[in-house]
Amino acid sequence: MSATKNPKDCHYLAHFLETVNKDVAKAATLLRKTCDDHKYGDSCHKFASLVRSGIAGIDPIVSVDYDRKGCDYGHAKSCFHAAMAIVSDAYDGGPILSKKVEPNDPLEVVNLLDRGCDLGCDNSCYLAGGLYLVGVPGILEKNVSVTYRYDLKACQLGNQIACANLRGALPVECPGHDNPMSNGFLIRRLQLKIRNERLRREYSNSL
Image 1 (cartoon, one colour):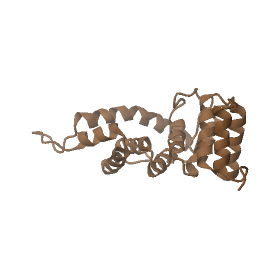
Image 2: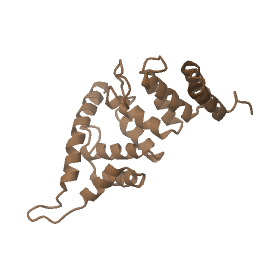
Image 3: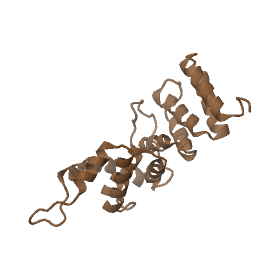
Image 4: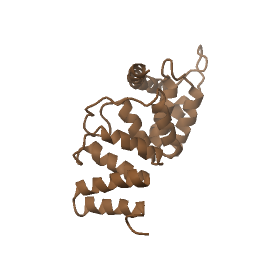
């Protein structure tokens, strides 16, 4: 099969163009075509990364569409980056997005994180669990049991904060308190409230 027919060959050629020939523009063009024509998730993810970092000379907002495609085509980190683009105007150290990124549906962030988790992205599992920990008013009910399952998978995938959450989530005996939560778990709840408030505002505007 020729290089123009095999998406892996096209992807590796793009990598060669970027790293050896230092021709980012040609690499980006090839990655975009490989993503669009062959539905190759690795190319979608790499193209989105080049756009997001600003070195491809393309409006950073375009990266979100290709992260969504990458997620659809099975690239775990694409799911995570697409979710983060909706949650925040700046992510992964890239430039501030010039336009507000709207979710395609109210639960898109949760769905993206869930798919990313299924595909093996520990950060997606960790943040999905966090959303269930604090909930999204009118959209997603709090569910600590679901949070535990996400944190467990995140920990198994190597996420040390999730592992710490699991240790902190274990009930401890405390006179005068029923099923108390550890300080570590409560601190994580406060951290996620900030992110949740932004999600709530963006979701409310999209409904």
